[in-house]
Length: 534
Image 1 (cartoon, rainbow, N blue to C red):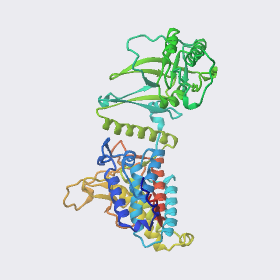
Image 2: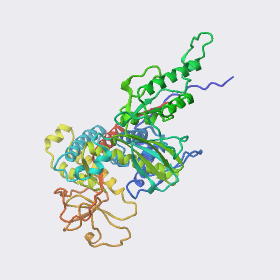
Image 3: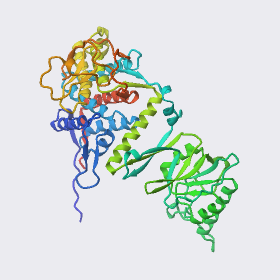
Image 4: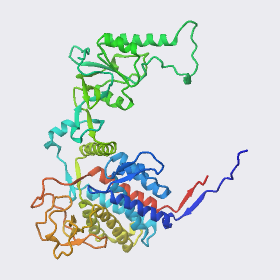
């Protein structure tokens, strides 16, 4: 007999943020995120300890997917950041680092969590109002009219880029082609394509998401009654050939099927100068439909003239050892990125970078704004909040139900959390400064033993917009509270030290700021965790 084990009662954990194991896990998670942050972030190798693939990355999407987090409190944090990354693609590490820092700074305050939450909502409102205002000193307008080629590439309707993997080749072999590539191992190079065209020299295309293999009847779908002497296979093949005749009569020149096309139907279509491509896969159905204007056909028993689309041309492309059918549209709403790299791991990392860049470009075209990068938005915003919170009226504290001291404590913790994100960009041990005029972030090279004048060792701020061309005063960014006087960040500095700025995606960073603060509030408000032990 099998042995029955008594059901265990659920485990109640009160005040989880006071438990050493949770705090140590939070600290470790924060160190992982911080050490991966920025252009000089350190790579991490992640594996599950019992075999399987090894992931080498410094990107939040891969880190969060491969990290095993057991604490329910921290799973709330990682799930929130993953949700942000799924929507915005960018600023995942910014969100994670800021959230961890907010929790660490707020839980050490002698302020009730409910009061902290009220104050942080007010601080978030101040931040968002400032970042979206014309007076914002770290906001940059993005002018797409000066990059006409880029606008043509992405299209006004924000087209889609489909990535084609090619491993074992140099990154420099990567290229972008208009339209879509479908891998077809059986097609040979050099043979001319005889594809039927319409009177306007376009190619009419039919797109099938239904199987055309002739075995569409499945035992799982139920029982079918068939008369004696009737063959289901023959009946299905006859139906397929009838579909083929209708496609020929309708002037279709290309048939693309998500699944398999029966060899007899393929041969019939070929004899009538109709090109047939099967096994296209589910992932290509949406971009194919969008690019050609065709409606995916879900049944071989009903075709309507309105379901067809059109293409400008079809060709055969060879990339490394693979053969592709290249579907060329009349416009460039859809394109294919042939992405090359030497190894599987390097290709995966490059693919994530390209997907993020494409998504950020789309977000920026919808809202043509950017924020200064290199830590400057974080330090500038911290300076602004310190300045703003020091001049609030008494009625604000009354409305929030807090004292001025409590507000200042929470505001200072919030500002130190923002500054901790900027400090995370430094991985080489040098000092990090912020100026007392613009509130920008400045990086001092490592190895300098004694410096009497910081102006002698810094040349430009983290984002690159400001050069050390005026008499600025500095402080070391170490997290101590202070109240710098800010007069705003110059849009056009008197001496521009570089033609290239380090910028962050406006939509992604604003979303990350909001997600980090709301998640930290949720975690701080947790009084009990109830875990099922069975």
